[in-house]
Amino acid sequence: MKILITILLLCSISTFAQIKGVVKDSLSGQPIPYVNISVENENSGTTSEENGTFRLPESINGKNVIFSALGFEKKKVKASKASEILLKPIDYQLDEVIVNNSLGTKQREIGQTENTILQAFDNGPRIDTKYFPYHPSYKKTKYIKQVVIKTDNALEKATLKIHLYRVDEAGFPSEEILHKDLLITVKKGTTTTKIDLTKYQIKIPKNGIFIGIEKLIIESNKWEKATISYQPLLLYNRVDRDFFYTFSGGKWNRVNKQENLDAFGRMMIYEPAIHLILTN
Image 1 (cartoon, rainbow, N blue to C red):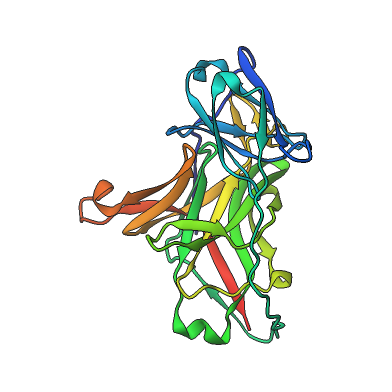
Image 2: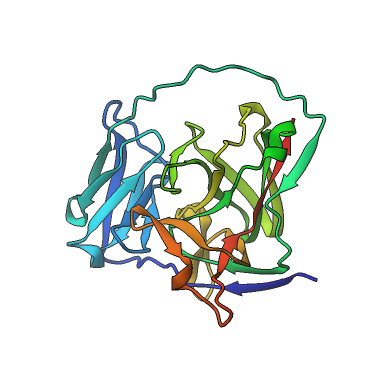
């Protein structure tokens, strides 16, 4: 039987004394929805709403705020000057595309863990990732068919964002494989959601891939009971790893093994409960 333990690390924003702003495309002037907004070097921040608006607590005045969105250059400004943020679009240099249609006659699951203990965290506006290394045996099932995630959701429905990152020379998550946002709606309760990526024809890279899950701190995801939290909560497995990566404070952070050792010299971390289904 799987054990579900929910730990709420409160992520509330006061309804008073707030910094209000809007994020727009610097060329078109159109609002940019679901921008990751992080207080520099802190695990705090928010997400822009569908109309580009956002709110931050006035207590961060004097600190830097970093705005990150797919397809736009990252921007850092003082919180006191964040009333209107203009992000510059990025011109992607697209590689030559060779279309090889997936047959879909074979499939295999990778990244599943034997750990049966799942925990759910309300961990702020972070992007938590799981790394999937490449193995030569994937040659016969090289396409990513589905990303499978586990969530615990108190609302009738809630939205989160999926990221697929390449791996840079230092082993960090780098540029995104897809040049579009993958917004996913999950249902109420403790559920497993399968995100079908068949139409994108994504091959798992030879140096592996990071799958990231981003919580959206938006009004439609807000759940108010005794406290305020933002849904859905992603489920995590406690596993032995040498390192893991998370995006918070406006940058990628690597936590190394020696920083989180248990009594047996292992680094036990909470890794997102994600696995992949590959196909041919």
